[in-house]
Image 1 (cartoon, rainbow, N blue to C red):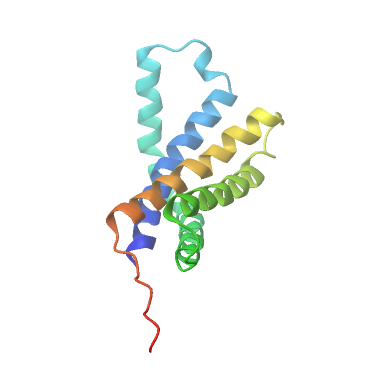
Image 2: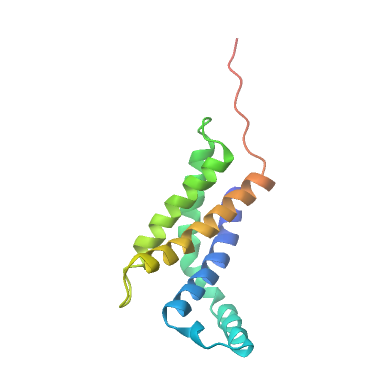
Length: 141
């Protein structure tokens, strides 16, 4: 249960921020920015944080479920599990977001894929680091 809580708290926060950075980059916002413009970016982020959680809550829990399934496979270590969860989230986020808007191409696919990859790897690492993982049951002899 703690695993899902970590994914639900971290995923929408980090993913929402990365999605905001990606969309501002795609719109050309970073061409001529000053320190005041960066302050506006953070103001927009905190004003839209409720929507990041509203729309990112269920996808984060789904990625947490994939992490939960992979933890029960003994041959998959923590690093490989983090990468597999990240790649799964990368593909889902890329397919969800990159087909939107006038631009399409490798840069847009990668940027929107990172919106899913980074929060899922961070969440999976936090779970590995701070949440007690189930131990394998000993076979009766």
